[in-house]
Length: 186
Image (cartoon, rainbow, N blue to C red):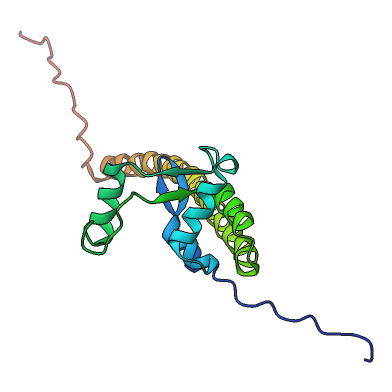
């Protein structure tokens, strides 16, 4: 067919890779600055520099800096080097979904804009997984209740059947004849 073009296949999205980089801190899903910088194709220093130059664009629900305790816990968890030995000197910045998008706008590079789409998709993917897991848990609870009710009914029926079988297994009690006395004492 002339004039009909086959749509180009989209480049494989690194959504799963990005989703694995998203962690939960302070009850929020976030990407650390080092991960976000790698995705956007810039150094962590460049990303943080641009963010600090545009701090008004990053309210607390878009980005926050980890506390020393959170940073230490992450260093232990991820086996990163200690400060003074090539490691970071400041705790990293953590970007929420909205903060990651805003970071792409302050970097304004083609790669940052392109990758921000994948970052959003990764956050949406995790949100969908969470929703589907909640739905699955709800359905499992319903099924568990349904099975429990079925078993309760079956237990009653089986119990009644066992009583009937036990009744049938008992030998019949002989009929007792009463002792009769005759009053013939003559």
